[in-house]
Image (cartoon, rainbow, N blue to C red; front, side, top):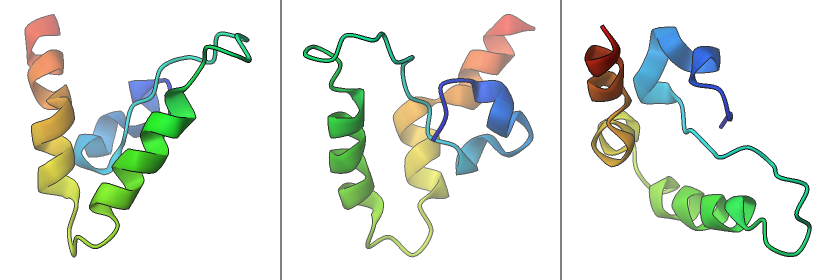
Length: 65
């Protein structure tokens, strides 16, 4: 998990992007969303296909070219 896809740019299917922390202690619920997502993929033997389908980061990078 990282707020910069550059952290996993060479292994896009292994990374889970998150939004930046906004210092909004009350309204920033990104980690709560991530707990739910991590619980969803926890039992998967290989979560890479699910990450690919969910976030479509490869498609995003292709559009930047």
